[in-house]
Amino acid sequence: MQFLHSARALGLCAVAVAGLAIAGCAKDPADAVGAFGSGGNRFGANGGAGGAGGAGGAGYGKYGSTAPGTPGDFAQNVGDRVFFDTDQTELSAANQATLDKQSRWLAQYPRYAFTIEGNADERGTREYNFALGAQRAEAVKQYLVAKGIAASRIKTISYGKERPVAVCNDISCWSQNRRAVTVLKGAEAS
Image 1: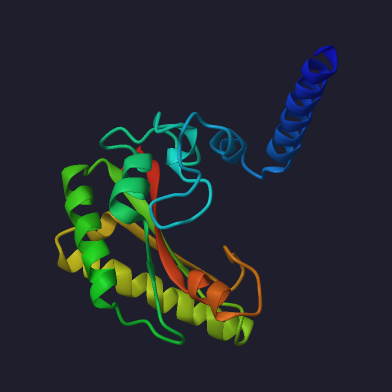
Image 2: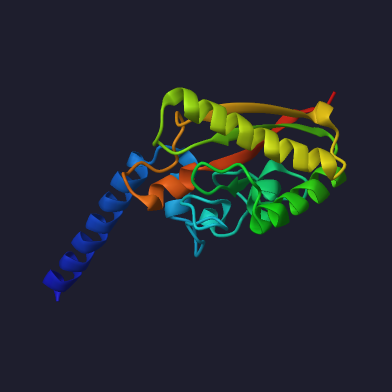
């Protein structure tokens, strides 16, 4: 009987050590919290790792608070990114639906200025991908302006292929990297 209790305690210690090792490897402290949240989902609304649901739905995690009107609310509940087909800048119907939700949220919370970050996958030259990322960011900006969002609140930047979210030589990674991300700033819009 004593052996059984010792084995169980040893097993629990091994699980705790493994958990701490995994948490220590997280790039973002919020991801470590998300890995061990009480009953939460480690994946965000679009299946991306480390979303705000990771802390047991408590509204903490990678995006911070998901209370209405916060950047976490925007990212988690509205959607902060749209994706593009290869070499494309046209906004698909799915992109337009996401941007419609963004425009309604941004109209409701006009205190936020924001940056639209254009990105491309790793294929193509650096110069081509910077231009493509800029065109994608500008397409999103023009759509939001057409929906009534003041252009003075919006900045655009292209990262080209310099900031991939997934790295592999496969469509599964390339499709995640062809995106435009709307990043809210904490300061008031001018």
